[in-house]
Image (cartoon, rainbow, N blue to C red):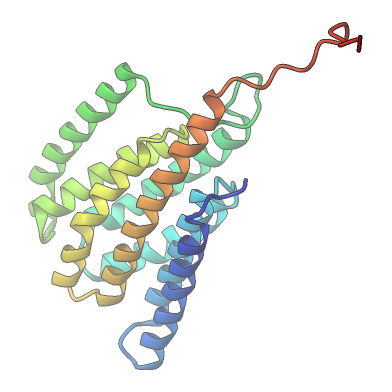
Amino acid sequence: MRLGRDAWLLGALTVAACATAAALYGAGRASALEVVSFVTGAVCVWLTVKENVWNFPVSLANVATFLVVFARARLLADAGLQVIYFVLTLIGWYQWLYGGEGRTKLSVGRVPRPEAALVALSGIALTAGLYVLLPRLGGSAVFWDALTTSLSLCAQWLLNRKYVENWYCWIAVDVVYVPLYLYKGLYLTSLLYAVFLCMATTGLIEWRRTWRRQREPAAAPPDAFDVVVPV
């Protein structure tokens, strides 16, 4: 897939994210595990924006490292989320390859209203349930942890179905995650999600363009019998 004029911005953000991670690790401000999470996360979002199916194996590595990072920070919902992400990532990988009509690759689409309503109601119910459960498990920043966990699962579901609306959810998640991780002292992870916010905005723009292009009627081939005879 060929990206539009925002391709240079997307690439620059990815390179900047990786360079920042290396610099902070060299300065002793980030652990090796957080750096791996940072880099795989940035590359994964970059590949997703490009609609490249390789985002899924990279995402599996990212999920594994973030599981440990969040568990150490006592963000229990986010840690548990990584386990669910692992399963959803495997499902999404299959759906992107074979979820289209006739077991073909999925194309970018828009979420139907009934499915959007079901996803929204599921997100609300999950947020309420986690808000009650997390204090009993010793979690911190309970409401925000529950909210971002629920929104992330909704976003991943929409991403697996290759709906444009997944980017709206990721943008909302990133807006909350940046200050939340600053509060928890995960400075590199907070910076990563600031980069994710920019990349998700780019992803929204690019996927909307792709969807509009798919809806444009293909140019009709010339009729073989429609010949102009010079007079």
